[in-house]
Image (cartoon, rainbow over all chains, first blue to last red; front, side):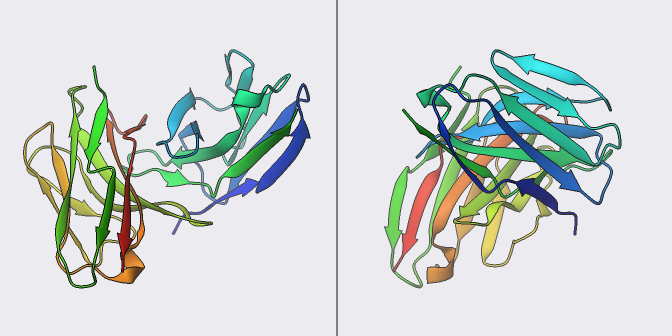
Length: 111
Length: 111
């Protein structure tokens, strides 16, 4: 089946640093979504992308839909303690009901 | 709007016991989903329902049954629980076939 490779698996950074993570696939996706999961909670949608090359921001978060439609990137600028959590990418093939999820990137911030 | 709600939040079962996880959404969404989340495995789709009265298998359906009771409610049943079903279960819903919104999860332990 389709798989998403999300990297890195974990990140340990200092408060104030910028963060970058990405997802890649061998399949072409028409939709890319980025979610954040806090401990003990369900994933929360951060950004949705629908067009190749699209760059969308949500506060300090910026995500891009790769030109090849096989990848997506999420950047967090000037990290703060509440950014701690697990970030998931998810992709959807056109016409498919289901999302394919990456394995997640666990972000830890040292104050 | 409560969004997606799930009950119970926590449950402990003995092997062989049965139980039903409840999910409801108040966003008038057409599609609903059940996922399980295990450490290092990301989110895996168990079953989904594209509309009231229809259900389809996802990636890991064995040992589970579902019922789309009406547009709002989608339940997941374990007929004979096994230790391998110890996991965190998330329900999600979406209006179209893309942006999914998740509930807070049910933490299930099978002894």
